[in-house]
Image 1 (cartoon, rainbow, N blue to C red):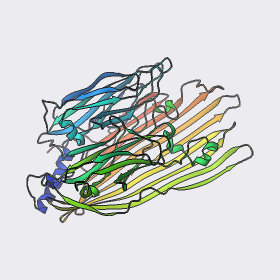
Image 2 (cartoon, helix red, strand yellow):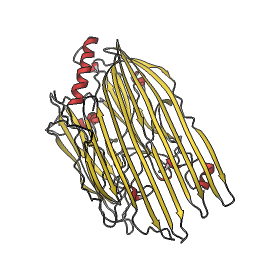
Image 3 (cartoon, helix red, strand yellow):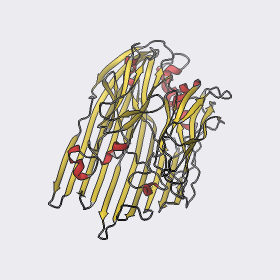
Image 4 (cartoon, rainbow, N blue to C red):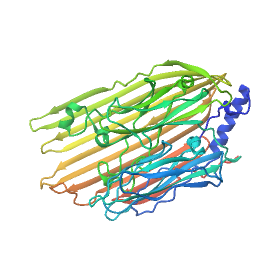
Amino acid sequence: MHKAFSPSRAAGPLSSVSKLLLLASLAIVTASAQVVPVPPTPQVGSSNPVTAEPLVSRPHTKPCVVSLLSNAAFENFNGAPLTYAPPSACPGPWAKVVLTADFTVTAGRQFDRSAWFYLGDTNIFYGTTAEPRAALSPSWHIERDLTDLTALFKSPQTGLASIGNVVNSTYTGIIYASAELEFYPASWQAPAPVTPDVIVPVSSGNGPVTLNTTTDQATATLNLPRNVEKVYLDVISQSQIGDEFWYLCVPTPVAGELETCGNTAFRETEISIDGKAAGVAPVYPWIYTGGLDPYLWEPITGVQTLNFKPYRVDLTPFAGLLADGSQHTVAVSVYNANGYFLSTANVLVYTDHGSKEVSGGVLSNTLTAAPNPEIVQNLSTDSSGTTTGTVNVGSNRTFSITGYVNTSHGRVETTVAQKVNFLSAQTFDVNVANGPEIQNLVQTSTVDSETTTRDGFLVEKTSKHISFPLTLDYSFLNNPNGTFTQVVSSNQQDLHNEAKSLNGFQYFQSSAKEQVNSQDTLQFDASFNVTAPGVGSSSASYRSNDSLGDCYSRSLTAANQKLTSVTDNKGCHDHDHWF
């Protein structure tokens, strides 16, 4: 919601003092011109998919709406074509562009499915679907802020909505989807933000790229203008098939005796430019609605399960290099990919509107091409064939990348400094032949970053702390009567803290925390058939606030596949900031 001011967007040259005052005032105005709407209150007693996550914030202007899909049926892997034309009644500039989509799966039997929308080979939505039941036809709503893709929407585009699905006598659930784009005209209260001028997709046409091994790459060729000033990469890496439960994997030599997947429990997305390391993105441990135990996620889904959030990598230190008039290649790979990941990304390029050509380059880069994770095993197997012990894997990376651009408003130097830490600690009690299968996991993945931008005597710093903690306890027990009991508990979190300062003066701070706790018990007969729905409970909470007084809060509880309570705005007061 907060946009930093770029002096190159001004009508003419500004003094350093004027730039400082404009930046500070614009920070207040842009952050205050929109409000975060509270989603409609879900129905207590319902089994429909529900999340505590907020909707996209919007200005008060009336939007023009463009339909992309209307109740399209997904029964195979063909997808549904998308055709887009800019809204004639809202030619721009736009204060906000929002994608909304609504999904339904017919009652019956169906797997969770991956879903993605592309326009002009550019990803505009990525998520998964909910699983139905014989007496449950789940419906849900998603939204995504696409304002940074404004350049894409200025001209007609074609694309594809894909929800690969199989419908036959066994898997009967048909998935339906509708989608619209909302364009909010800019006004004095809600001015149009500065958005990227060029967007380059990293995709396989109208879909993500398959990455089966560490060396596989998704690539894009960059032929950028000569006046590149800032560059970002929004990336998603989704685990599938053998990698779906990558966070429960172990070193390959012990995967068989522990009855799990190989290549360790460490995955990481690597970004390179012309073959040289340029950035790192952690892989979020998404759990889909069929994962581990489908009843864990009914009705409260896991964190981001239905609507993935791209991770943004700051490539601005490479802006001068990418503006040299030569062709360059950006590549995305997943370290330890083990069959397989799907990856997609969008390169977002800001240009210097005051100059047709800039110069610059990379001054220093301490990022290594690949991580060097440390593995510690402490396992033993007794005479009965039971393996017990621990397996830990950790990775710690600290690096700094500095680059500069000589722009129309002077030399701008950018340093991105990050600490990227990962640790997985697993405990096992496994007997492959006839004993219990117990696997417990505590995983932490954190990124602490500081981006420093020097523009004359102005020094702007953006500090971020991002964390993805995950705790999983899984047990599958043999009962004396020949039946089986499975007990699973999960604790997912998504934490974001951000602070911005100018010449040491902090002018903005925000934080957001999402948490989903789920636990369930399933009973199986001797033939491994589930004998009854799961008996469990779950809760979800989302809270965000910032230094301007904006606050959002929602808490949910559920038991035995039904929503039991909804609590909104606890600890928040009503705010509507307008100037």
